[in-house]
Amino acid sequence: QVQLVESGGGLVQAGGSLRLSCAASGRTFSSYAMGWFRQAPGKEREFVAAISRTAGSTYVGDSVKGRFTISRDNPKNTVYLQMNSLKPEDTADYYCAAGRSLSTERRAYDYWGQGTQVTVSA
Image (cartoon, rainbow, N blue to C red; front, side, top):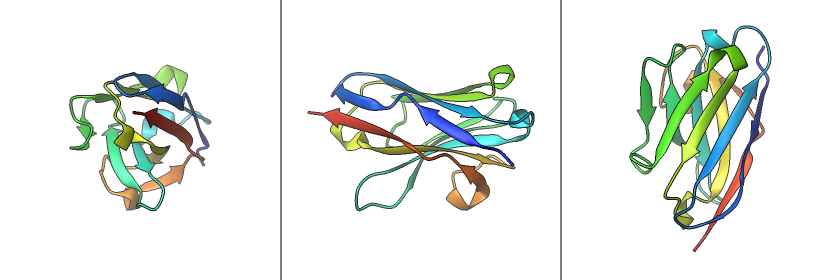
């Protein structure tokens, strides 16, 4: 069992930056690939970024490529999402997730956090 808690969301102006954090409980954090997804009101949850267990591989969604970066610190049981050049269309609830394999698919992830809200004003 892994428990995930996101933090770092908030209100930011377009062009600004935020860094989201996701803290995981337990001693098996390094056994999991980690992902970030987001869900805007009235829309499906979409893939944002993912990172392998050792951080050797990362995936980034096309809509955020070049602006968002995913990283992890295994000794701290934490995964990060650095978001730069934010746009109003990035407004959403952001969720971190843990899974056994690196994937862009929601179904590959077994554990989910409660989400943190990000609002980007124009």
